[in-house]
Length: 423
Image 1 (tube, one colour):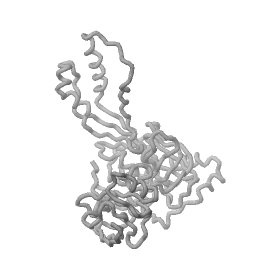
Image 2 (cartoon, helix red, strand yellow):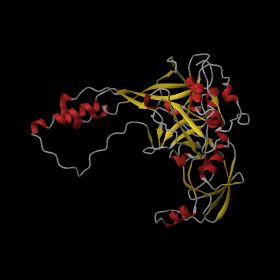
Image 3 (spheres, helix red, strand yellow):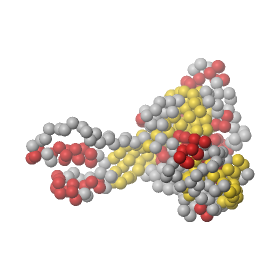
């Protein structure tokens, strides 16, 4: 699972404060032993483990769960089950638990410690006392997923399997299979893994468009490697934008939940009281409680369908950094002596930066422009602008109305495919 601004990896301990009390000075002939032992501890081990949250020939027919349109996907009232069965969580776990899997992955990464050994100063100081350290190490990750097709398609997070050398899938009954990554989409953090098996238990996908704050939420996954862990809470909010959550490079309107999710829950299902999957658990905000986030299942279904049929997802982009204008933002910009622009508008979307050779640059957008309309629709929030871009196919025409130096300009832009790095 991901944390905001940082994946779930063990962070290095901070350096001691500069003003720490002075330590007694050891005799000079012993001084080299302690740093050498420290260095040996730092360099020990050839592998690292990441517990994830946010840490082939195959028929291209989509699983039945992904063939459902939004119009036909139904979800009963979220709390009716509780009225009929006070032990509804147990019923949900019995219904869904066998379709939730553990995903173990390995990646070969450069050993950052090995570079220390090549430092001439280190070599001069320690000489041949330095331990041998390999240039590469194996990073191991643990995440979750859930089966959407009886023939082996599994939904999970992109960051659980992206760049993995090996993927292993373990079912609740103990069976383990080699997994093949069919596709990853880092922009939405969705991935599909396939295993060679038949007659597998599957989940039922719900409709995340019908979610309401206050409805029950149940999470099943493998937090900290503890398989088949169940937690519950409620839907705290819906429609949390990527920028609000702290992941501006992704394009998801997240579900917020207070159901406890932890590293290792990444890719596992968030369920309603009827046992339907409404989201994929993906991230938490670091050093907080009750602030977990999930990818809405309707978004995941669309992405998964493309990954299964084509192995990739193309996202349109313009190449701008933008911010929603409010009276407070306007005043802050105009009061900043280092600001290169003066803002007259209190509504709209301010273009802060334009990437070189981007569709926005080629279409005439400039930093300081205020976007007020896209395809004749009023734009008051950055999320609305992003949605307008997402709804325009690559190479299509996006009509923008902008304000620049008191003048209104009409510009035609043509979004291109967003470059991604899936390594």
